[in-house]
Amino acid sequence: MNNDIICAISTPPGMGAIAIVRLSGTGCISLTDNVFTSPSGKKLIESKGNRIHFGRIKSNDEILDEVLVSVFHAPHSFTGEECVEISCHGSVYIQQKLVELLLERGARLALAGEFTRRAFQNGKFDLSQAEAVADLIASESKSSHRVAMNQMRGGFARKLADLRDKLLQFASLIELELDFSEEDVEFANRQQLSILTDIIEKEIDGLANSFRLGNAIKSGIPVAIIGETNVGKSTLLNLLLNEDKAIVSDIHGTTRDVIEDIVNISGVTFRFIDTAGIRQTSDVVETMGIERTFQKIEQASIVLWMIDMTTPFDKIDLLAQSIIPKLKDKQVIILFNKADLQPEDQHNKFESLFPDLDAEKLFISAKQHQNTDQLQELLIKKAGIPSIGEDDVIVTNLRHYEALKNALEAIHRVKEGLDIDITHDFLAQDIRECMFYLGEITGQISTDEILGNIFSKFCIGK
Image 1 (cartoon, rainbow, N blue to C red):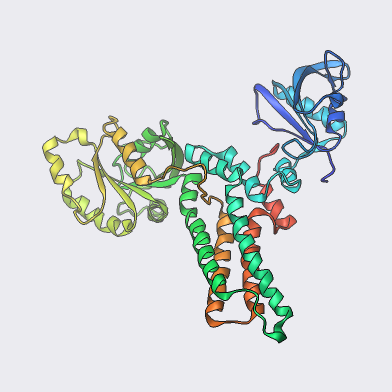
Image 2: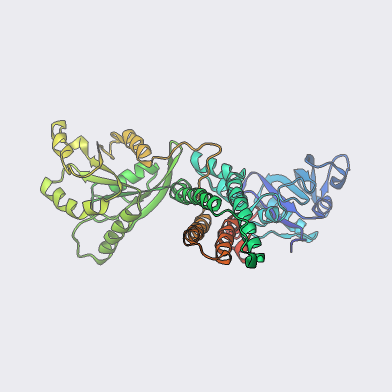
C-alpha cells in the first residue's frame, strides 16, 4: 500500500470558493497529466518542482473545470514523495467528479492521516512532529497554535533525543562491563551516572508536569457554572457563548443535564459547563443532573458560583453547606447575579458572605450584561496561562504523557539501583527501558498498531 498513488479532498467537506485535491506517490504527476491540459500543451511531468500550472481538467473531452495544479518532485514535498495539489472551484459536483477521474486513472482514496503517515515513514519528521500537525489543524487559540508550532518545529523531539543520547552512552558502557564481568572492570562512572539520572529525572518530571497546562491549552480550561435553580446560569452561558445554547425559563429545574461549549476569550480557550441547579428535589431525572453537577465541579479548574441576590440569606447559607466542601483546591469566582434588582447599599452584606472561602466576588447582571467584561478579565486571570515562548516545550498529548510517566518510573529504578549497587545487567535493563519509552514518543520505537491508531484520528486528506 505504501507504493500506491493516494488521493483525497484536503479541504473541508461541502461547497466553498475553492477546493484542493491532493495526490501523493510515485507516478502521481504522470497520472494527473492524463486528465489535465495546459494552454501550452506542456506536460506536468516535464516541469520543474514547486511550480503552479494553470489549465483545464477534462472528462471524455468535456471540460470539467479550470484549475491550478501545484507540482512537487520527491523528496521536496510534504510526504517526501511525488505530490500534486489540484485547486479547483468548490462545487461539490466538481470535487467528486475530479476524484472519480483520478480513481479511474489508477489512484486510490487515501486513508485518514495517510499523507502525514507517509511523511513520517519517509523521514520528513518524527512521530511527535506528525502528531503536532493534527494539533495545529485543531488549534483554536493563540496558545494552542504556539504549542503545536513549537512541537512541529521539533523542539520536543530535540529535547527527547538529547536525553536518549546521554542515556545511550552510559547504557553502552554498562553493557560493555558485562563482557568483562569476570575481570570486575568498571567503564561507567557511577557517580557521573548518578548526576546524570538526577538531571534526566528533573527534565522528564518537568515535561510530565507540563501536561496539565498543555491539556488545558489544547482542550480548553474547564469552567463549571453552578448554583441553585433559576439563578441565571443558563443566561450567563448564552451570554458568554453569544448564542442561545441553553434554555432560559422562569421554571425551576429547566437544566437537568450538563451543557458544554467552547469559547475563546483574549486568546485563551475556555470550556464552559452549565450544570443542573442544586436544590432538594424528588424528581429522579433532576437528581441525576445534580449528581453530575458535583462531578463537573471535581473536573473543573475554575468554578463560577452564581447566587441570586433576591434569595434570602438563610437559604443561601443552607445551599452553601453542600457546595463549599466541593470547592477545595478550585479557582472560585462568586457571581452575585441580578445586582440590578438590589440597591448598592445591600452589596456589602453579600460581600461579607463566606469569609473563609478563598474566592473572587463580583456583582453582575447576566440579563443586563452588567460587569460581564470584568468577569472575562477575572477568567483570564484565574486561567493563569503563561506566555508561551518559541522554544518552550509543553506536553499536550496524552500518549506522550503516559510514555513520560513510564520513563520517569524507569529512571527512578535506575536511581534506586545505583543507591543499592545492583548488578550491571539490571541497571542496563532499566536504562534501556527509559530509552524505550522516550523513543515511543518520537517513533524511534513503534509498531504498525500504534501508528494505525495515531493516524486514524487524523482527517482524510492530511
